[in-house]
Length: 320
Image 1 (cartoon, rainbow, N blue to C red):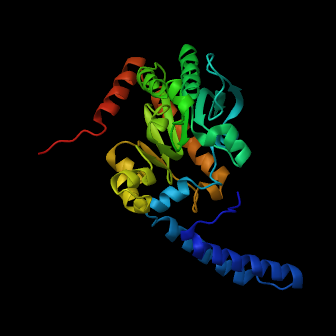
Image 2: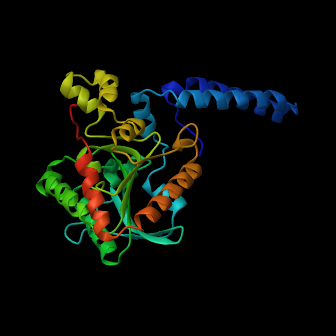
């Protein structure tokens, strides 16, 4: 997938790519052999891309996680799964399109998928509410998870949201209660459940579909109780301190793996998932399939016991 949007720290990458494009255009127009020059530049491009993406600051990681060309839930479903059948509605109020869900197969295994979905343009973002679910979105997700439990099938959740929608209507219909209810019910769901943070996972809006047996994070995804901008506005009274906040929040996949929150970091193609949707989907599919196979060997009692122990251990500390 071509990268049509360039981030500030990608300046060197863009300049080398422009040189390659100009040489190829010249060769096409004048019939000149530039293969040796292009080979050298492509090797240089790969080296620069590797060095750049191995030394990203926390705030640069946030930029990658929010990249507008990054693959969303439906993009991964279309590439990593087969036989997708989308299901709609919470059977109470309406169908919240900020959360998608339904049956699919992963390497022959039937699974229930729930995931947050953003839009690619303004029209779709308005329809998807910029990936910020209302209460009915979380109630739809829980309805589908319970359906998976009824048929003894595992659940896969895709996390990618700036947070649950905080509007008046959302509050009136009980957004806090809907999320809290999901936390309780997911903690005792009697089937394996795995979540994958594919972009940004912010606040309770992410956790509302994130109480799972295993938490996978794509290499350049982020997961936090609050956004860097929100944290900076509270602590330093200005969003200008977002870089300081991003570092303090420990929100990158590497940080969360070290802290024991994330169970596995799924590698992305060099340059980020937005440069290669297929490669990213392949890596994620392999990680999900392996994880579900491991969880499938556990009894229900052991599954619930380990799930409880996992969340009890998060944030625990002691002084020796």
